[in-house]
Image (cartoon, rainbow, N blue to C red; front, side, top):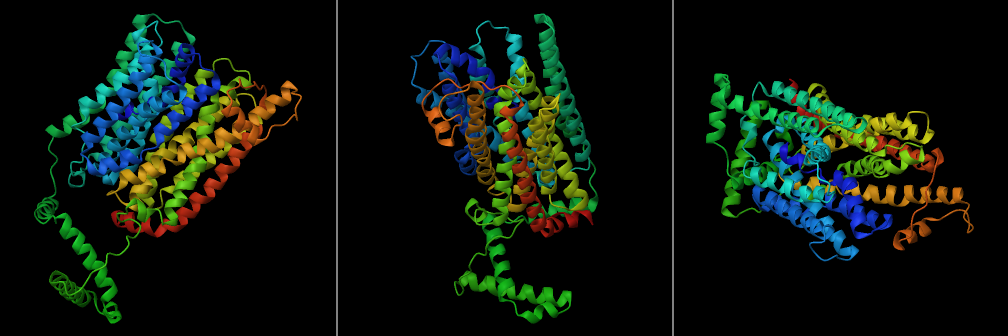
Length: 568
């Protein structure tokens, strides 16, 4: 949770960019390019996923910390004049490298915790991704205490703070055989963590609003930050108390655990058993299935031992079968599965439309006549957090209590987002408050549900690579929906309002050319600026609901098999 609090650096870009813009004399188009580099750095995690499978997790975390320190540290040196200025493409690389460190923090935290809590994937992913969303708000509050007149010190804090936290904790973050440590008190422990998360979100929201509306003394801001740290440290009491309180196990369960520890197969044995078992399925005569259960088991065991002996002597060559859903997939095996692409495109449409709102929230609120645009930015980060925590909680309820596919919760989240986008399009009074609430909650839920669902359908062994491939949906959606659709419609409306001479309307091509040639963007006012964009986003969310429901239909039997047994 603490490492994930440092993995939300990308959400601070809106606070960093004015300082970079001022000190390097950039215009809005150049800052937009740095924003694209930040989004790519935040989402391109192939290397992090691959290295987390080869290196110990502390090694992956160390690489992430070094990247964060070098990337943002160098930006700080340039902004403060301690290093020579660099061209825009080099600044984009530095922002990319710095933000890409987050992918290592994300991967290490999620891979270790999903393996340590395989029976509670929804809550774990929701809580961890929620803290990543709150990271920006936490770092902003710490910066407020520093009370520095030099705004570049926020960049210094982003370079040094997460690096120190990650290096301090990197040896603790590792898989510890959590499947052998399931406790009766786990449900209660997660309830406490959820309560702390909700309290933290409410507290941060209150502090943000008070600091925004009232001119507070430095002492009061310091007190607020001390309370924030206390809330962040409270969860450590749970593992500490569990270490000292021994839960009594049922004798039968204790015996089974000891037996499983004695007979735990090596990786090679596991692999061979799996192959031989699959080969038995292909080789067994059809009449075996007609026999009584006891006789059938005996015959299959005989056939299995014969195959094993023949394989050991090299008399038969055993081919490895392709995995079924619910088993461990490699990335290449997952890429040929329709279910994987349904998850990807459903995520692309849902989270892409949500990210379009997040990226354009300043312009949206300005066009509707709101002055304090950063209030909506702070609010959507809190709703995003609550969406992640709530998405993990409710999707877990669905799979545990009804053995029903987790993606039904995603369909609900996308339907909520469709309503939110529609409200934005209508431009009704108070639409910014309701719209940010609905879109923030729906967008956040995606990042709790998708990683948990991917680990259930495609296994834990290569989870790092699978998760980092799915995160590519975020920049892809942002690039198409925000970079092309939203910006070209906004520019067209702005041109109409400015009564430009040439053509009155602007094509996608001219919109792209203005991105290349760095001219100052036009301003648009009124509900018409984002009317068409919001309607398109609402329609895309409805398509995403359809894709999610197709996935629900296709994976019903898998979830019944995975969770039906635990119900009975």
